[in-house]
Length: 154
Image (cartoon, rainbow, N blue to C red; front, side, top):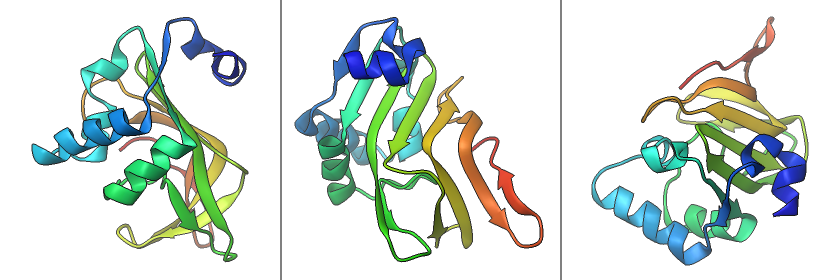
């Protein structure tokens, strides 16, 4: 895919496979059936193999409509200014997870964390082992008097 080569050349060096809506729903459904959360799915060994998986906006919408994808990078939401936002694509592979939004500076409230977060148009995570997201870029927690404090791991 040329788009992947342009936005994430490090992930385009290997085969890129699109994960269509049905396959994405099946993957998250099987994971939910055994009690896995979203981080467990997206950090599974298959996403650290020398292959990149691409989830389109449509596949992400289908997953969001069917499952509670509990990530600090929501698939869809409304920011503090009342504007809707959504993830436009996700790439997972080679020990990385990269999510894309239509704009920078999205400040939103995460009710489960009881905190505001700010998203860049590109948020990157390293997935060194199952269940761990590290070296996060493009995501920070809004802290009164301090500003935006970078989230380093989950």
